[in-house]
Image 1 (cartoon, rainbow, N blue to C red):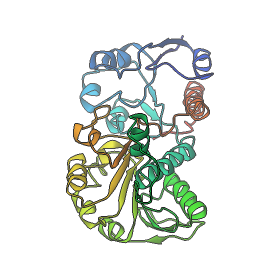
Image 2 (tube, rainbow, N blue to C red):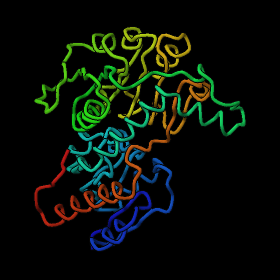
Image 3 (cartoon, rainbow, N blue to C red):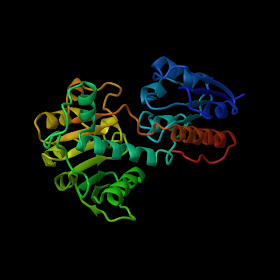
Amino acid sequence: MTKILVTRPMPGRVGPAVRELGEVEMRDSNLPLSEDEMRRALAEFDIVLPTLGDRFSAAIFAAAGQPRARLLANFGMGYNHIDVEAARALGIAVTNTPGAVTDATADIGMLLILMTCRRGGEGERMVRAGRWEGWHPTQMLGLHVTGKTLGIVGMGNIGQALARRCHHGFGMDVVYYTRTPRTLDFPATPVDSLTALGAACDIVVSCVPGGAETRHMMGAELFAAMRPTAHFVNISRGDVVDEAALIAALSEGRIAGAGLDVYEFEPQVPPALLAMENVALLPHLGTATLEVRESMGMMAVENIRAFLAGQPLPNAV
């Protein structure tokens, strides 16, 4: 019987669906796999359903020899924690779960825009701490979002979904920088550099995929180009942002604030960011709804089903 390792507890109907496909071992822990666990996964299982944090690096694959595993059915759209080329070299296919995450992640982008621009996190902390002394005309003045200019870095499905929310819901002008030309169903202005985007916008949102090509893409050059009144939001991958450069820009008042759902060394969050009132921090909530997580899991299940049936993989990467 096919042996399947599921590296985290699964939401809702996903667990039972996976168990129909073979002999399943599902970890109780929500911690990432250790190196020893990853080596065992490749050696003892036909299929592994990993997720963010399970770092199947080139070194892990190199130590695998002739692995038993033939499929890594990743739970998540991002797969920069898996060295796909090293997996392919050993005959291991890799799939992901795109599409299901688009609207939920765009919603979190909208939430972070409002939280940082309108100082929502800071205001809630004030109320909870008993420091609110009542309304007054100059209390906690933030940035009015309606009618402002939004800059999207990476105009893929998530970037487009967020841009539609901002343009149609808040009357925002949209400027974008992307490596892939796009035909859009809403008005938006492309620019040819990150610095041009930073200079033009009141709010800059990172929506690029993770990976070596985008690591530290958002760094000192972008933050230096942004306005002192501008805000930066990241809903993509933590390591696309040079956190040291972001901290410096915030500390020196070169940008007004930031909203972050992901972090460079997740789950570690730099103490400097934790101490800043003008930063809204979320614990990677981008896809955190039952409906979305179930959809992601069922997409992984369909990838496994297709593999077992010898059919083309729906979401091969």
